[in-house]
Image (cartoon, rainbow, N blue to C red; front, top):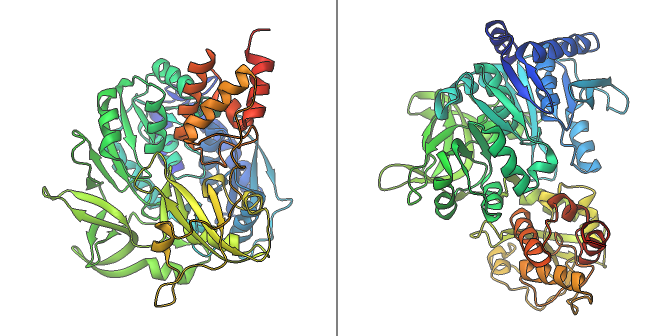
Length: 555
């Protein structure tokens, strides 16, 4: 059976001394192959083919080495999210039961560990699986999507054709390893003789530093979510005329397309759920007036049913969900398609055809949402809230869903007593899943059929009820020139009447786009550039003011 490791090996034989990756140093194809082969031998000496191997790395380069090494050993790789709360990580490990953990020690170097892992519940039987990625689950339990070697190889080859990547070109690598689009950035270049340039985490979070990196690296392809592009354009980024921009993971709006088109060589809108393996469709955007999902890439078939749900078919689908046979049978069907009876994946996405026949995204048919590139099952957040001993019921909605730059989760709960629900969530869910506000109600409103009235809640029926776990009550701006200017930047960015010096920017509704706006206001107000990473470290008016006075202002 051919794996992506075999494809990369073939490329190594063709161009052993070509540049494969750039970090603080440059790696050739021969270098990457040597690191992956050595690690693959170490893995094979410890576990049997068909085992699950967990990958615990922060470096994108190490991620590429770990993925290739696991495949070389005949194992399925499970990339972990280092930012995931311990409870969520424990749930994933307990479900996947990996036989081995690859823990990154340094760039391209790993320790192989078994300590602390749950005992495998099966003999190795995943020899056909290249990787497993966990996505949000509506029941509160994340679900592991299993993707086979053949589907991965075929999809990478299709993407090399369209939107296209050629030998000698370069791609920026900045997606987290727990997102499947990271495989596009890391593996696609290595299968065609191209290269990837790793974006350090601190630069990815700083629009100005990112713009400098792009200007210096001059990548052929930069892939990111619309939320990231909004953050970048809000910072005043002038663009990369020689780069092709790929945007996916959430809806590309006409206003954002209008901002991006003059800033790049080409703009592509790409679409694809994890179950559909990387990107399944691609559209070259040439006008902001019409944004479509485009046409399926090679090997993908699609059609819609009577409800407008988009269904994908073909060989390039995931195998299903690990340990979730019932859910697999529900989402992956055998049914009639334009090409006869085939295996079909129900995406849950509602689409329609525009006047020109182009496929357009119209929304979801269930409670799954995409928020700043993160796939979130609202039911998962509700389930975790209801696990709290003081919460009897919970409902989670998206506020300002039609304004991507301001959209946020909000929760409504019925609780027996006051409790630190934000703290509870922080221990159990990624920050992307945290509501900006949690409102306590005496009871959830109901429709005449007895169901929770989500529409009523969204329309503001909870006005007047007690709001808990949000920012502190507004107070007068703190005294002191620097402190007052920081507070004013906070107030304007959050559109608040006033702010307390202990107001946490993110708990009060701040997000990645507003973070860039805040940085610009701080720069304008103080005459200094406050790094984005420091705002993350000091997210209150008081703590950031102290940092600025201590390190940034002249003494």
